Amino acid sequence: MIRFVSMKKCSFLLVSLLLLFLISCSGKNKSKTKHFDLSREKKTVPHIITVIKPDSLLFWKQRYQSDSVNIKFDSISPFLTRHFIDRFNAKTLIKNKLYFANDSITHYRWGFKDSTEKNNAFYNWLDCFGKGCISVKLYEPFKSEKQNALIFINQKSISYITGRQILSKDLWMNFEKTAFAKDSLHFLIIQQPGKNAVWYRYQKNKFNLIKK
Image 1 (tube, rainbow, N blue to C red):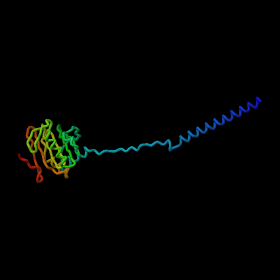
Image 2: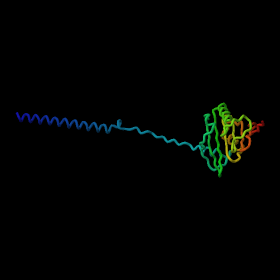
Image 3: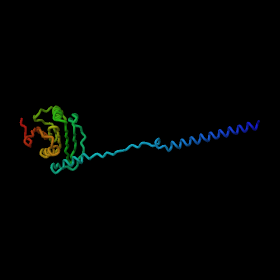
Image 4: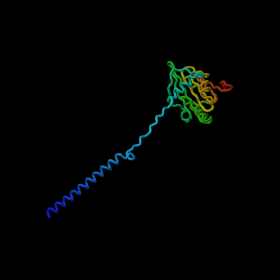
């Protein structure tokens, strides 16, 4: 009887060990299967696209210094100072500073969707013109700038050039006509420090003085 019980225990132990061995092997097989299951373990690697933007300053440098325009300067940089006209949501915007020797010229240009939006920006600017926010009437002489300035009022744009030196209206008129041939010239305002602004109307391929 004692031997019978011992054999029974031995059989039970053998069966138990066999089951544990099978379970252990099964677990290992599962873990191995999981490890080599590429569909589960494969990670998605994002495709990175590098976008190279063109050098807009180089583009404008070439426009300013082209053979047909020939505005001379040593270097160019973006001019980030906000202007009153910025609030009128221009479709296109140019803000550049042109450096030469110990001087510089600032060039703003706002392009609008149509002449209506351009007129809205221009007339609002006249209502609050310059740092003193003076009210300016159309074609009326006024004093505001402490620097020389050219203001081109075109069909769908406003171009504003300022600098300490005297600015050539013919040179910048040529730039407008060459770089923006589809945007016709309408008016020009010339300002000099301490002098009244002078208004011109573009007719017959030239700017003619508007007399008041």
